Length: 314
Image (spheres, rainbow, N blue to C red):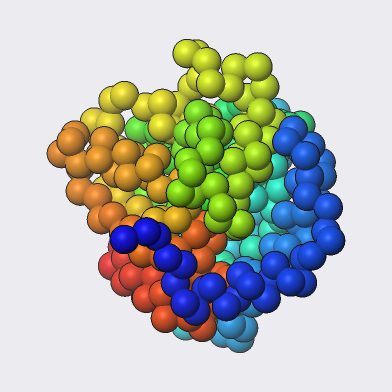
């Protein structure tokens, strides 16, 4: 039986395709054009997260190498769980803003009672290679160092990211292992892990939400001429990792129609083969970003419920 798109999502995709008819698609390699398109579309998806009236916000600047990066701390009023999540937003490592992803971070904090630290990591191509993951690690280390004043147990901090942010988060976790900073769990939502995922799979190429051309453009921005070569650091492209020992337990989620499917499954397998617990979900009929195509769909509700369960258990 061939792949079929989830019926709820199929209706949304058809409506969006009609809405986008005539829109110019950025050419392969047009990073600024793709960034503009992502930044235009992101508020239509994650911006639809339900309003979180009980969540307060604090803003900090965190040292990251020779720079400072903005972070936002979202905490539900009256909660004191002791755990926390460092959250890395999506956008293919080339796009995305704190404002775009604030509704989603607030939504998770509202649902779980667990505070979220949303990280404004620097983006490629202006800041390529391992810089995004280094920024994410800097935010993790800052939170660990300020845990007491924020009411957090440093042994109960998770790293979470979706899409490009999932790759950035996985890279930060690798750095944390190398530098001795505790991570309780990594929560990777359809993560962008492998710079070699640029050649179309005939079954997945027709899926419209994230194309192989988009993926090439983003990885080319991150790695330039090194993309696909033997010297790529697993901190920049975590699928290059060969030694999984010592990494924290993981929750990995991806759609079966997502071009990140195989690399997500392979990363989960690497963890399991190293004796590390990993909960893996492959959602039938789901392309990339399925959960926010329509947050009211059954598959979106199920996926968010699973994430809430994992976050609440930290």
